[in-house]
Length: 443
Image (tube, rainbow, N blue to C red; front, side, top):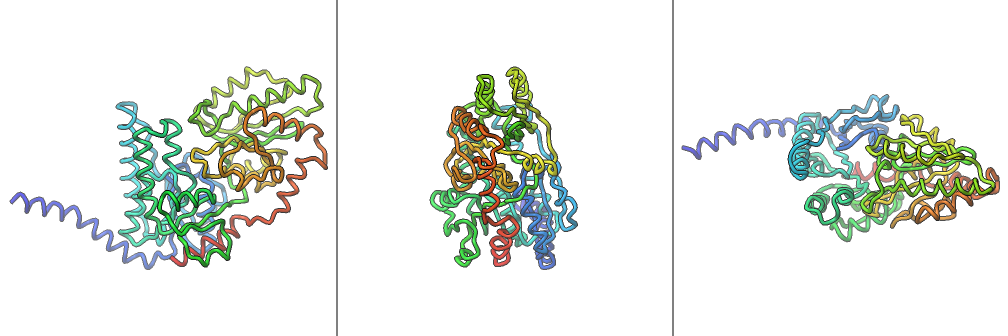
């Protein structure tokens, strides 16, 4: 009798799901030109996923973009009638219980809500997912794809477990669990996109995602692998993270939310490097060096912004002015376009990603000084489109050299800018159309 009751209960619970799956599969033929783009983060601060949505819309797809709506996406996205943005609720951390319990509750909440949104929305031929954060999104998107016949495309920006390890250390149980999950579920995608050759190679060698494809070119597409490396975009949609843009006589310093962090071995951007370099630059002026004054613009909303604002005030700079506004997406390229030098403090938690801030700067033909890490050379060419530094001493020396004869038409800054203007790198739209679109259509 008990077994019969359990069977009836399970049948009652599963029947609506089976009917929903059957209905969505029936409708899938009518939704072959619909794509879900999933960001388990702030849509306004996820430029690559905004680019994907726009490119898909230009390719004739209708796009539903799911994510947190904490900051405004670019106007081009909002004004496109082929793109619909669906807000996901963001559960704030609980104030009770151990950290692992709080994290578990958040993951379960996100999993249930994302599953509900994906199942109840119009069926999609493809699901584009940003990773990180991939926990729990990868498994949920794959599960929905299995039920509804959708193909999963994962865009690897970095590894989520390595970012989690910044705050907990690499051997923490949460970090090890996240790594196991990411490694297992990361193999479920039909197509994988990544930002660097280094990440492509690491995914192939250590994660079992084989048949890797190098930097996107039309000729390489014929190999038919499932892993594509795209290094766009080379146009600016909105605020990046952790960058600095310097002007001679005026300095425009741009730093995003993640830059407002205390310096520690587990942080991926050490803002104190810049402050120390600016102090050295100021002292050179006070010692009689013929250097211009600087105006620095730092943007961001991170939790340590107030801390660093007080620290900057304590410096009492005489020849360096620091401003800390928050810019909308439309104003960001104007800032970069008016700057003379960009400075990137991004370290990379995995050493395998590329700083989008530098890509945005290069899109505005802005040379950079960038903090060195493993695969930075794939983007920043030392002495060609910018300079690479190791610490505040080296950064200060580079600033001194670059601005010692400012504004000199024959100086390195102008040469770097000229090299960027003359480079033949594909812009995002051309690269996406030649590489991603054909692979999507062939799946």
